[in-house]
Length: 333
Ligand SMILES: NC(=O)c1ccc[n+]([C@@H]2O[C@H](COP(=O)([O-])OP(=O)(O)OC[C@H]3O[C@@H](n4cnc5c(N)ncnc54)[C@H](O)[C@@H]3O)[C@@H](O)[C@H]2O)c1
Image (tube, rainbow, N blue to C red; front, top):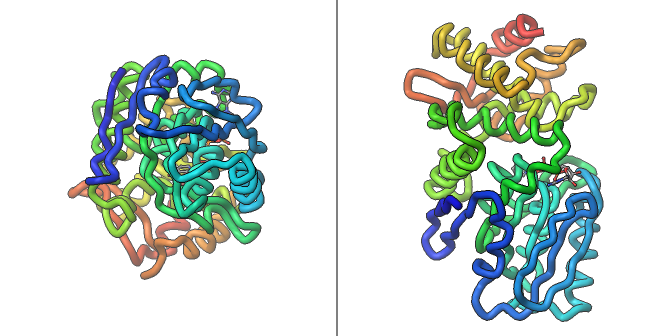
C-alpha cells in the first residue's frame, strides 16, 4: 500500500493506494462514528465494511443521476434513518457517486464527514481527491457544488479489474495529463505506483491552492477543448478521451504560439497515443463551433484562454487569437 498525504492543515487527509485498499475502511472511518451511510451504484459490486452499523443506498447511472433530486432523496433517507453529524458517508463508485454523495455529505446537517472509495481509474487519479463536490443542473454540468474535503480516500486498484475497458481508457486521459504537470516519470511505473504518483501531483496542487484561486487551475490542462467537445455533444467521447484530444490540441497550439518545439509536441502525441487514446479531433468537427464554445469557458475572462505548455512549464495563457485556434483545429481534423 502507498499512502499519499493531501496537506491541508486541519483538513489534511491520506489517500491510500493499492490492491485491497478498500479493506482499510475500518481504519480510516473517523473516531467515534456510530453509523455509516454507504452510497454506491448497482453495477459496482464492491462490498465495503465500515466496522459500524451501516446501510447502503444505490443511486442511478450517469450524469442524469448526478442531480439535486438524488441529493434530496439521499438527505431525506438519511434523516429518516437518523444519520447525525457524528456519523459518516462512504461513497463507493466513480466520479458520479463521489461528486453526488460528497455534495450531499457537505450539506446534510451543514456537513458530515465523507470517506471516498473511488472505483474508476478517473475517480482514483482525479475525482475523489481534492474536495470538489457537486451536481449538474438542466442548464449545465457541475453548476451547483461545494468544496468539502473527504476524511480519507481509499484507491483500491483491484476494483479496476471489473471496469469496462472504455471507462479504464477514460481514466488514462486524466493520467496522460499528469505527464505534463511534473509526472515525466509516469511512463515506466507499475499501475499502483502510477496511480499514487498522479494522486501526489494532484495533492501538491490542491495543497497549494485548495479553492482554485491560482495554480490548481493548471489541473485543467487539456480541458478547454475537452469541455467544448463534450458540450457540442455530437461526438461519442468519454471525458478522458476528450481530455486526450485536448492535450494534443494544447501542444499544437503552444507550438504555433512559439511556446514549445516540435519535439515537445511529439512527446504529447506519444504519451496520449501510448495509452491508446485519440490524438485528432473527431471527423466532422466544426472549428467555428468549437471556438464559440471555448470562448464561453469559465477561464475565458480576458479572451480565449488556455492552459498551455511553455518554457516555464504549463501556465494559464489569456487572449489567444481565435484565428490560431481555428487553424490548429483544422490541421488536427
Ligand atoms: N470532483 C472532481 O474533482 C472531478 C474530477 C473529474 C471528474 N469529475 C466528475 O466525475 C464524473 C465522471 O466519473 P467517472 O468517469 O468515474 O464515471 P462514472 O462515475 O459514471 O463511472 C463510469 C461507469 O463505470 C461504472 N463503474 C464504476 N466503477 C466500476 C467498477 N469498479 N467495475 C465496474 N463498473 C464500474 C459506473 O457504474 C458507471 O457506469 C463526471 O461527472 C465528472 O464531472 C469530478
